[in-house]
Amino acid sequence: MKALTIRNLTKTYANGNQALKGIDLSVEAGDFYALLGPNGAGKTTAIGIISSLVNKSGGKVEIFGHDIDTDLDAAKECLGIVPQEINLNLWETVGNTMINQAGYYGLSGKLAKERIEKYLRELRLWDRRNDNARSLSGGMKRRLMIARALVHEPRLLILDEPTAGVDIEIRRSMWNFLRDINAAGTTIILTTHYLEEAESLCRHIAIIDEGTIIEDATMSEILRRLRREVFVLSIDGELTEAPELRGFVTRLRDDGELEVEKGPETNMNSLFAELERRGVRVASLRNKANRLEEMFMHLVESKGDAK
Amino acid sequence: MNLALNLVAAKTIIRKEMVRVLRIWVQTIVPPAITMTLYFIIFGNLIGRRIGTMDGFDYMQYIAPGLIMMSVITNSYGNVVSSFFGAKFGKHLEEMLVAPMSYATIIIGHVAGGVLRGLLVGALVTVIALFFTRLEVAHPFITISIVLLSSIVFSLAGFINAVFAKKFDDISIVPTFVLTPLTYLGGVFYSISMLPEFWQNVSRLNPILYMVNAFRYGILGTSDIGIGQAYIILFVFVVLLFSGCMYLMRRGIGIRE
Image 1 (cartoon, chains in turn blue, red):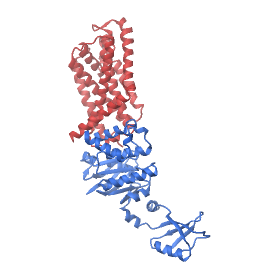
Image 2 (spheres, one colour; image 1 turned 30 degrees about the horizontal axis):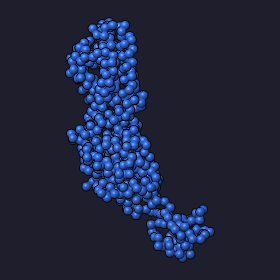
Image 3 (spheres, rainbow over the protein chains, first blue to last red; image 1 turned 135 degrees about the vertical axis):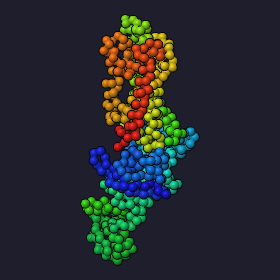
């Protein structure tokens, strides 16, 4: 079953800006999907169209088989949206924000109360239910937007940069929460600029740039295609120059650490064998950059070069 | 359309609107009460005593229905325009737009909020009026139906204003330059029979004249216009304005990109 099907979706704004140039996307029910792309790539426009906040210029969108042109209310019932910008009524209390959202989806009485308590507790906002939204911290506001989007228990949850500006601890707890609701059956589509977030959470990835999808594959497939990785090695002792290692490109950094670039044809065992042969002892090792970030930059830059 | 869902959603919007009105009561309820008290003191008591009677009633008694209607109109309009534009400006209108309720529900919920505030303030002004004069309702059904229909008309008008408004200035232009002059020239303070024939005919183009006079007829039993005409005009405005609101919502004008 497809949670989301997008066919040839186009959007041209009144000022002539062509934000989407005919994108196709297919998200399986239960998937955890990342929609990545640089600023202005078209991610938020695509989400706006899916959630019916932006009029499309052409193409089809179906949410769990419900066409947004012909069966919009049924499509909306399946969908929960956490937008990029804070769009809470800041003068409303946390509790009233949830009560209103439940009411907009036809939930009232005991069921609404149970859901509101459940999600406010899960997102650690229950103690703040009588406080105005404006008194919440940035991270709490983001959590309230997630709780609000979940009150009708949507089958598809779309989060547009939900962890922007959120500290590491809260970000990690939000990741765990999202993993849990995904494991419980909710399909999740996530846009984020934190690529380690996408790598950690998502099983599928689409990369959108300048209104077109330039990559759409499973996370493991994308990482397999990664052409090159750079590792930073802390060395026991001091190196005066970068050792020559067969099959690797090396560089000695100003801080004394050794950078090693590894291609797809070599492996880590041969790297360590080479280092051993030269008597270089490695204290620790880390990726210079997030693997997905490297892939992302490679794809976006190569698209730019091709033009 | 899921009727049960839409009923709950409409109730939710009305509740939200009433919570808002009561939360900011210093802005929503107190100012009209003070303004109308001043009108009663200055126009009704101080100046009115020198004017004498109008259409056989004390001047204070004569202007009371018009002042009540004026407060209903301005508060109904003001509630919807400020609440809906505020939601649009603060982007929390999106909460409603992404939900599976119909556009009619969004309109009806906000209009009901406007009507409730209009009636609340109208009731308060009536109580204030009773400190200054005696009011007996001559035709209760006409009084209630006219005040309700007028409140609905101006709530719908406020909704359309909010849809088109892009900045806060845009929500004060219509009340300042259209609504207030039309209300003052709508027979609140005088009978149009006092005007030359030409200006009487010009006055008849003002829809607020019909609302004020029909309401006055409901309370005092006197009017410058036919009550049937007032009902026709009110029904036509309700249908036209509601259709206009639905058209704007469906097309997404002012609310969707």
